[in-house]
Amino acid sequence: MKYYGIIFMIETLLGCFYALFLGFNATQLLNGIFMVSLFGLCIGLFLLIFSDGAFSIIGHSFRRFNYVMAPKRMKEAMDEDPLYKKELRIRQDKYAITMPLILISLTLVILTLIISIIL
Image 1 (tube, one colour):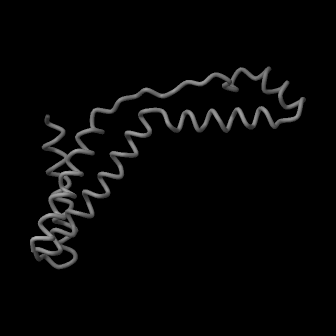
Image 2 (image 1 turned 90 degrees about the horizontal axis):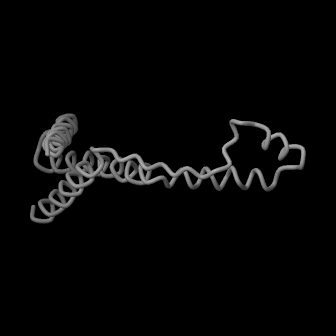
C-alpha cells in the first residue's frame, strides 16, 4: 500500500515541476501531470511485459532460428558450447512496483482527461 502513495506523490511532484518550467497555470499543471503519468503508465506496462517473460520467448525463437539456419559446422560448434542455451527458460520475475505504477498512472491519466474536458 505504501507504493501507491509514493508513486502518487512522485508523479504529482514531477508534473508540478514540469508545469513550473512551462508557466504555472491550471492547464500546464494538468498537462504536466498527464505527461508524467502517461510516461509512468508506459514504464509500468513495459515492466509487466518484461516480468511475464515475453522477451525470453522472443530471444529463444531468434536463437532457435539461428541454430536451424546455421551450417553444419556451426551447429556442431553450438552443440559443443556449454554457454549456448537450447532450452527455453521463461522469466517469471514479479516486481512489487509494477501494479501500483500501472494503477496510479492510469488513474491520473483518466482523472486529468476528465478535468481537462470539464475545464
